[in-house]
Length: 275
Figure 1 (cartoon, one colour):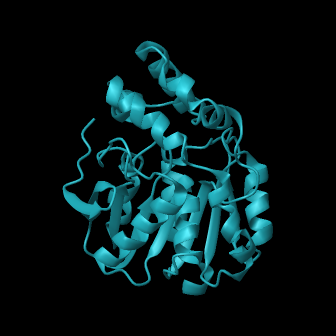
Figure 2: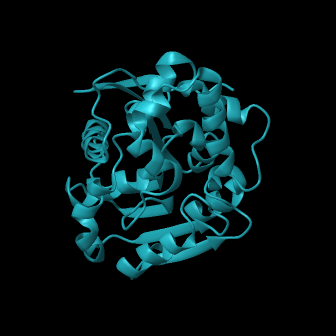
C-alpha cells in the first residue's frame, strides 16, 4: 500500500522523513510508536487536514526514515529529535496526538525538552510506571538472541506481535505494509536495534512532573488493549487529574485500525475549553 513521506530532516543520527497535509489553522502533529510508522495515520491525517494543518513523520530508525547501525534510538533521543523537528517546522504551540511510545516521546518533549503544546492527546500510550513487560522485556533481555532468528521466524514473530495489537484484525494489505520496514537482514537488525534501546528508565525522570502539565490533556483508550491494558490509562489519569478519559469499546491497542472513525471523531471534537 502506498504511503509517501516526501520531506527530509537531518538529525545527528540520520535522516528523518515527514509530510504535511492541509493548510488550515491550528497545526496538529501525529506521533507514532513502535513497531509502527506514520502509515498508522493514513486515514486520520487526511480527515483532520480538512480543517487543520497536519504533520506526520517517521521516528529515526522506523518506516521511511534512515535505519543504520550506531543510531541512538532511545526515548530521550527520539524526544530531542521531535523537539528539533517542531523547531524546524516553526511550531511554537501545536496540538500533539501520540500513540504507544509516541506518548513517552511527546511527554519528554513537553516536560524535559521544554516545548509547549496547545493541547495533548494520548491514546493507548506509554507514559510511565512499570511498562517493561511481555515480549518487550524479553527482547530487552535477549536482544542478541532475537537478532539471530532465522528470517522466517523473525517475520512470524513480528506479524504475530502486530496482530496482537488489533482487536478487529487488519484489512487486506495492511499487515504487509507494517511488516515491510522490518523485513530482510537490514530490517531485522533495525527492529531489534530500536527495541533494545527503548527503556523504562527514560520515562521515570518526568513522572513527578505529570501533575504539573498545564495544557488541556485528553486520554483515549481501547477497552480491549492487550499491549497496554486499561490499568495504564488509569495510572496516567491519576497523575494528570485534569485530563479527560474516554474509552472505546471493542477496540485494542491500534485504535487507528480498530476504530479510526471514533478516534477521528474524538480528535475533531475539540476540548471543553475551546467550546
